[in-house]
Image (cartoon, rainbow, N blue to C red; front, side, top):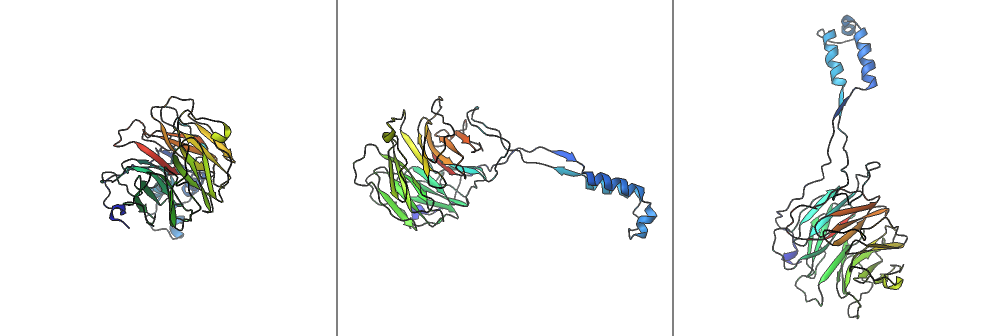
Amino acid sequence: MLLGDLPGDRHARAAAFDPPRQHMEVESRAARRGRRRLRDVPARALRRRGAPGWFAPSAVLVLVLLLVVSISPATPPRSGNNGLAAGRLADYNFGEGYDLIGADGGVFNFGNAGFYGSEAGQPLNAAMVGMATTSDQAGYWLVGGDGGIFNFGDAGFYGSEAGQPLNKPMCGMAATSNNGGYWLVAQDGGLWNFGNAGFYGSEGGTQLNAPIVGIARTPDNGGYWMVGADGGIFPFGDAGYYGSLPGSGISPNKPVVAIVATPDGGGYWIIAGDGGVWNYGDAGYWGSMGSTALNAPVVGAAASADGGGYWLVASDGAAFAFGDAYFLGSKSGQSLNAAMVGMAGG
């Protein structure tokens, strides 16, 4: 383990998700019945039943007041980003959450995604390029372009490529479903596996039409996909091939920036920098930002837990929600020390 990979004192703190609250007083039907019954019982009868001598009708009023309860339901936030993000208030799933990562190692958490530390304000040998969360969302890993790994919360450290010579910078990572390992991928398709993450092949040493920009794993950790900036798909292990942009005769308006797999591994989404989304296999299409003018390019994406929706994040911190993925907040319109480079969640 390299000292540069060990989490030290963390100076950044992301504001925890705190939905707005509303207050109203409600007196239950049972409380009203109890008030009528108590009012009809003489104080001496109450004393015969064991109530203390001071229990008089005036005390009944105190008891009734104590039965009045104050209910403060949590109201989910409304969709934001100047109306660009979609989100429904009904059937809101408070189990969802996502993290955004900045190039300086800053981490911003929304929904139920907890904050466990960051590298913001720390000297870095290379800018961050991606992150992955643990399956229980109680920790995460950050990866730098030099292959340095920074682990927080219950995310374990299993090794890194920091200080090792690389032919091309790293561009992303994926973690195993049991949190026991992870894969790192470089722009030339080189792949490094750590912990219990298996090696199933790479594109290192292969002439590519476009650099690799992302990676996603299969549900059983038995394989993974790489995606190129042109939308080319490279499956390894038990990862199935369901199509690609070049194979579909599609040239994206902006380079592809990410791939996200469906929960069952039967498909994937390809995301471009203009917010365009292409779905293959059993991945559903829930919308995109491809026809919308953006303030900043899209740089990352994540799927909801059931695969019925997805989020996109732009470099200015704007988040966009589609399908059953709810809008939980963003950094849009706020001052950032560094551009966002990716997201993770579900």
